[in-house]
Length: 89
Image (cartoon, rainbow, N blue to C red; front, side, top):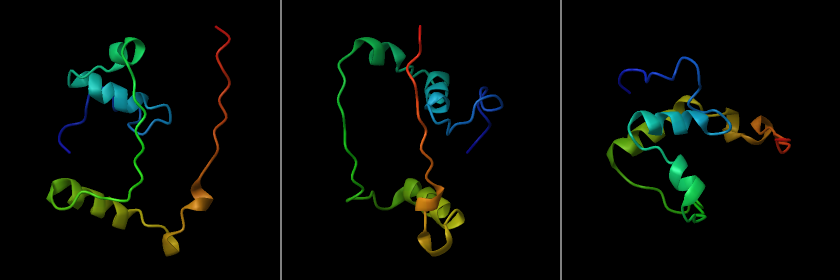
């Protein structure tokens, strides 16, 4: 929604490493890297058992789901495994 962000031409928002999300956060003044590198962390588990109801977020989510629905709701053939190796540095 709205005007494209400055980084969108060179970095996809849905980058597999999350770089697009981090770039978006930095652009609006929410740089999480200092906290990630120094702060305490928590692991959260979202099971999808409860979805938010109503509001603009639900409308956007539902439109996205309908637009990109797979035949017979089949998603498993689209899952790809990405193997990462630690940097040598």
